[in-house]
Each structure stands twice: as C-alpha cells, then as structure tokens.
Length: 448
Ligand code: BG6
Picture (tube, rainbow, N blue to C red):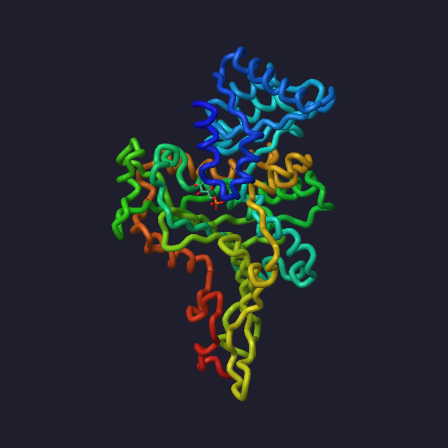
C-alpha cells in the first residue's frame, strides 16, 4: 500500500468534517514491514523515534501505545518484535490486544503465557469493546448507587435474567473468520459474559480497577461449565432473498455446523444467585438489531392484583440507550384495572445535549489514563474460557449436537420460545411493547 492508499482505507468510514479529516490525516502515518523480521521493527522504531524527536519529546517521555488488531497467529511474533526493537526504555509502554484471545482454555493460556513473558500484566490491555459501551458502564452505577436495587438484587426477588444480542446482518464476507469461531466465541464468551459478570458480581470494595476485576473473577469462578442440555444452537438458512450461512462465498467448509445463533443458560452457584437462570441469546441474521439486559422479577407473593404481570428492569444497550422498568399501575380514571406501564429513562429524550462516545473512543482514553477497569485481566480470561470450553469442544467435535435452522431475518430457531419458557421467563403481557405509544390496549381482565 502507498501512504495515500492507507489514508483512503482508514478514513473511508469516518464521519467528520473535511477539516477534521484533514487534521486526522496529517497526524496519521503508514509504515510497512514484516511481522517476523527484526529489521522491519528497527525501522519502525527509528521512524517513531524521529517522529517523537520532531515533536520535542524528551527522554523519559517516550510513551508508546501499541494496538494489536491482528490475526491471533501473529500476536506473539508481533509482541516479540515490539518488545525487542520498539519498546521505549525511557517511557511508558502499553499494549492493547484485540480478541480473539485464543480458541479455548489451553490456547488462551498459551497465548497469555507467551505475551506475559514479554509484557507485564499492567502493560497489557485486553480490549472487549462491550465494556466501553455507555450502558454497560452504567451497570455498576445503577446497581450500587440506588438503594432499591441493592436490596432486591438476588434470588429472592429476581426470577431470571436475559442478555440478548441480535444483529440483522449475517456473516456475509466474514465467513472465513466467523467459521472458525462461531457465535459463542465471537460475542458470548467475551462481550455477553462481561455484561453478565457486571450484573452478577458482588459490590467491589472500591471503584479501583483491581477491586472491580477481583469481583468479576470471583463471580465467574462460581459458574460451572455450560452444559449441552442448557444450550440451543442454530444456523441461518436462506430466506427473504438473503443467502443462508452456507451460501457465503467466503466460507470454505460448505458443510459447516458452526452456530450463528445460540441461547445458553448459565448458573451461578453462590448464595446470591443459586437457582436463577442467566440466559444469554445471541444471533446473526435475525429480525432486529438490539442488545439488552432484561431482569425479570418474581411474582408478588399473595398479590391482591391477580394476573398483574411481573416487573422487569431492562437496560437497552443499543440502539438508543435506555433504562426502563415495566411497572404496574392503576389505570387512570374511574377504573380499578391494573395496567402495565413503565418508568422510562430514554437517553435521547432525557440527555438531549449529550453526545455518547463510541465504545472504542472511551476505551482508548482509558488506556491513555492507565485505567484497567474496563479491560480483561488474565485470570478473568482464563475463568471465562473454562465456562465455555467443554461446550465449545463438544460443538467442534460432535456431529450429534442438535443444530436448528432458522430463516434469515427471523427471531431465531422456532424452539427459542420454549427454551426461554423452560427457564421460567414469563411473557405474560404480550400486549406490552416498549416504547409505549399509548395506553389504549388495557387488559380489562386485570380488574380487581
Ligand atoms: C465483534 C464481533 O466483536 O462485535 C462481531 O466480532 C459483532 O461479529 C460485533 O458484529 C458487535 O459489536 P457492536 O458494537 O456492533 O454491537
């Protein structure tokens, strides 16, 4: 690539004014080399050093951030090349690593060992961009700064938890990458498990990064490996003029049994959560695009208002961030019917002047600030892999695990509703859908 080709590539999707784009291009350089050749790294080092010198960078302030968004097979050669030839002895060095961090417990541990021999843990930032999303960062604030949540956040009040990830696009053009990983490795073992750990962890002793990460690891250690009985797997097929997963040109194995959809139930064996199913659902080529956390509370014991639906707390991660609580209320007016309404904190209505940064924007700033809270620690990663590895190996090796098909653009496999019901999710008020437009659909059978 030429320098110009490079600039064209990296700026093609940036939404910015011409002036901003010109400023960005002026500070962006392209320097090519080979991953496994010292001479390439030395020439990079020289290039960076000259750049630092030209900006008046003095000794002790050669602070360098390396960002490895690379195929995992070259993580170690690149980290070696950097450490040997580019590492600033008179400054701060930080290494950002993009997933995938291995394929299972063993390969991840191997990678961790090799990287750990080169860079100490406090210089490594394993990025999981879900931890940079506004609503994910809000989980701790919401849980630990509201007294009513701290009191009802356990098995006594919560019936089930669902964490849902839906995308409307398939794997078109990314089939080569995706087929080795599947939906479990692509978004569940990392993004959704991170969300789960924030919902389920105990209160950290402080907001220091190690205090938070200690609690996340602790709760993950209480989760046994996911059983195949608690898994529903699917793969999309052609529909609505869209190709099926196996039709993708970039897919080499045309018999692939890689799941593009999964619903998995995880159990946390501790005093707070014993018996509460945490259901993760994730899929490509579905009917809508959204990510949300849904906490369904138990029925009111001895309720005066029979048939009143359960309360739910929903954190809408994307699109259009919101927190809302499904809430029962007397129908206003002369009637004594119970209606379900909501307490709705929709960000775009409430925080109208606020611009929410992109997850990566916020995480890169965290790296510059040396804040590890929203990055994955080595022991956390290992624990996360232990929860998923046995099931992943079964999926990789056993042809007899059921793989349900679903049409491109649908809600997922037909078996999904029964799967979620099996774990107690009660969709008792199918009339309600958020955001509520009007309350004209009152269910009169809910009368006292
Ligand atoms: C990535 C996965 O990590 O996350 C993709 O590799 C997925 O397959 C993406 O589409 C989702 O991220 P976001 O921010 O668009 O929800």
